[in-house]
Length: 210
Image (cartoon, rainbow, N blue to C red):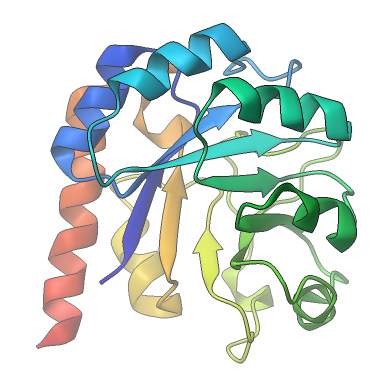
């Protein structure tokens, strides 16, 4: 079954809506330049509202070691997600599983990325947009993804209820990650869009399992 992550959560009501709809994971953004950025205090409040068996993921972009450790002192993150140029040693030092995000464009060798970050739980594949680190709502050419990647794929970038079934049918990723595709404004989620997205994931999973 394809897992779902709702990223860029900034409000308790959105965290609860995602959990109730069946999201497997929620993403909190600790990158100050993002419109979905949350402070450590906000993140701690959000984390306290999350019911059991929902994975809490913290997203960082080229942070210092101290920044990550400060977040971890206050927020019970289950998984770390690194979106910048962090090297494998940096990513692995926090006693948490981690995902390495890769912004995909022609010329990016995903097999080489998987070999370099072999200690990651998976590769999160997102669109390459100059000067940004995710959350753009833009998709990328899925044909650039090798079918023999040795790490689980978390597919991101421009997904929404209208195209997620096609993505799962074509790529069979381990998980799908959505942010802008379930929003009314940046950082403001729409409960009905979250439900529609997750329902589409469940529908195509059932169809493919027949």
